[in-house]
Image (cartoon, rainbow, N blue to C red; front, side, top):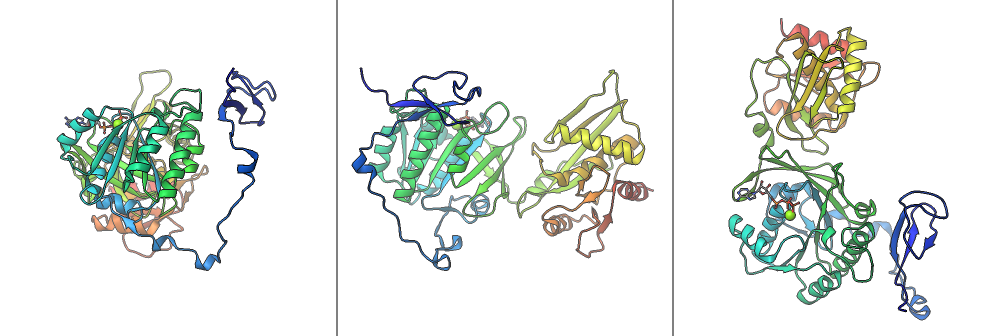
Length: 450
Ligand SMILES: Nc1ncnc2c1ncn2[C@@H]1O[C@H](COP(=O)(O)OP(=O)(O)OP(=O)(O)O)[C@@H](O)[C@H]1O
Ligand SMILES: [Mg+2]
């Protein structure tokens, strides 16, 4: 009988077994056994350690010193910290149908103007990719399409073609013949991504990997995938909307938290150079329950509208629904408003929506959400030039947040002249209204509408 090439190791206790089981026989943890390759290296091979010479930290090449490779999309280059770097591995994830393949085909086409790109597709046939390329105008001679799902074949193709960019769409469709499990399993995803990362680094070719997301919206596969790559980019948006936001969650070659905004059109994704004006375009004027929030997770804020609708409930338990905002956070904010401002919300349904399909996770949205709720509850529209940001503490205090100056600058650029900010903000500007707690914020909006 052929010797088995793999074993199943427990990620909790490290014990390994010849066969998989739902529960680790050693430590009793559930669902922790993952398939692992048995090293086939001979003792002689293993006994040859080599290392590159350590160098003084002051002499190490700095990030800024890297030559950047432009994606041909300037907002994407900026979000990546100036473009891609040779050997950089980027993981792009997003909901099905959001436009991952479209974006990567556009980037590939731009790069193929001067250089060679190898686009490996495991999800679609080469013909399907061609149809999309025709639609978005990406038919380039230097754009090579390979429909392949076997890792060893992919590696061979990369070594032979030596392209200037590798795109793998997607990591969940490729498998290594050295593992028994099927494509998309934790062990396959780990193996495929680590082997291709190693290859891309040794050949100094940038590699973009598409990663599917699971039901909860996080990247499917092992967490190690996110640790392994240099950059993690997440593509977000609502299906019914044309806007798509690419967020850089992690970046070893630039700042994390940067974002790029696109709109999905017939001929592919179009970059939105001025996202704030884009998101403010359809804003209702003089309606209660709307406020502008300068949103950012990086250095570039975008003004987004936060809407709330508070209405009398017909149910025994009032409804709380959100779009683009965390529902648990809404429960906390609702409780803070009730306790600290004395209003009664237990007989009210509350709906919160961040307009444009953007998902806002940062705590700076607490204050605008609370003010939008109060505005809708009291049925008093907030002034058009008002915006707000700040985190709410459980005792109703308004706490400081990151990137204060950037947010204020963006709001002022769009003519916002009453910006409600945390009291600790150390920027002096006549447009700022500093508040210590939610009660003070309520006084401001009550006063503002008189
Ligand atoms: N003919 C068309 N005209 C305009 N837009 C289109 C057209 N065909 C597809 N699209 C848009 O492209 C989107 C699909 O894009 P794409 O295939 O790049 O997504 P994806 O993220 O790669 O999806 P998957 O996870 O399934 O691979 C569709 O949801 C739709 O919005
Ligand atoms: Mg796709």
